[in-house]
Image 1 (tube, rainbow, N blue to C red):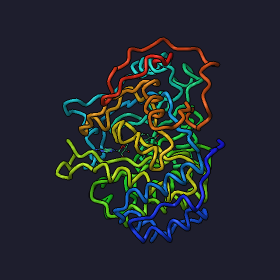
Image 2 (tube, rainbow, N blue to C red):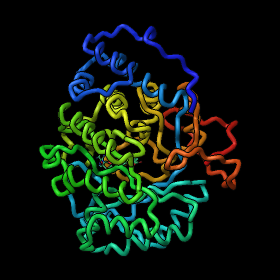
Image 3 (cartoon, helix red, strand yellow):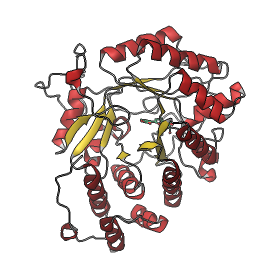
Image 4 (spheres, helix red, strand yellow):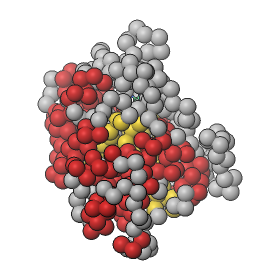
Length: 401
Ligand code: V47
């Protein structure tokens, strides 16, 4: 996209933190930042300075454009054998609130999503002890057959690792079977923090960080693109955050398969780490800005409004983010962990947040192709939730999906 923005060295502000000055020189020259630079950015209290630099990079790449999509999350089961301390979503099979959808229930949810104009189903769930790999393949085949126009972004690297184990297939063959069934790309969840010290405490039974990266590399090799995430705000150090981002950047240099990066703020309520306080707004904006600056080979940084709150996500559009994620509709992972945000935002509400930040909203599909609603059947209006964190949707917008 053309930016139309004039950015020059003369516009650089006076930084409160002198350590940002050599980093600013590199950023303006388009040079890659080192791990030490990353650490200095994370350690700096000059949030506006760090944010200015991230916004500079964001505008150089995307100008004023801010993306969002119309999507539907589907979580087939919350039964999970991993019992990660970070998670409030997973349940033992006999625990209160444990559920597993029959395939018919999934078709129904998906049909509702299509009626609302969804261009993407985001499908992730627990590691169920009894469901065979075939259940997930059937789920994907059934969705593809019924809704061929909808992009299926399904199953994290953690789920892929688990399916390979239960089906006794290699990672590559597992991914090939998923692709053949109709998976179009993979979401970025389960990455958490790659460092083994952290993983041992927050998600001991998940695939290792190295395995997560290997599964991502294999997916990219067979033509399945994916997102990537980092869960911050629990027990990780700044060094471990930087290490995580650099490992993603190294992988992207090799595969170019990552589409977007999403920093995920830890929500402690109802988890095994509930004594940890929630990350602050400062942490959230820092995470967005540092990832924009270090991940120079990622096109897109998402401010996932569900976990950031619509207000912080909106401000993040001036701290390096160029995407707000989507309409979502039904969100369980964060809401089980105490999120107080709504589970759904209409297209009009997303557009309003973006416009109010002085950005230009562009509806995209999963792979960031613009969606032209004029060429698509207009779905029936869905009643708006009417108040998202104090935001009243614009009534003049015609699509209310
Ligand atoms: O993998 C789990 C995280 C992820 C908690 O790819 C928690 O487009 C905070 O990956 N507090 C799922 N986080 C969400 C995710 C995602 C979201 C939006 C878009 C995309 C994408 C991916 O949420 C999990 C885990 O890392 N998570 N529990 C918790 N208590």
